[in-house]
Length: 155
Image (cartoon, rainbow, N blue to C red):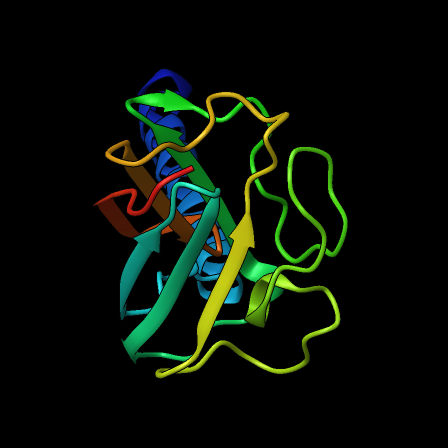
């Protein structure tokens, strides 16, 4: 038997072994660190012309405040400064947000609890009666809610 006939067989076996080893490594990596999933929850929102935005956790999974990210748009325009969550005093917002948006809050955000913050007049765009306010909530990097409300009241 010539050595030339063994070369393709050995090459094929090595290629198969490398493919299997790669699949095992990828499979192990996925099993060790599975992708996080978005918590299932529902929310309600309110906005006032004075800049107050309230979000109520209606039902579903409890959410850790430190995993939250909130993005707000007024009439389709994003706020210049988005609310950091949790916070107490932040540029573009009045001090003292409530509920899980407040950095002094402990524990998860649970059904029935309301969180709020107030957009400062120095943040742009400002709220006014009749403005369309879009609030997007993210937890662990996944969007969990998109709410659009009309700001109530007078300035």
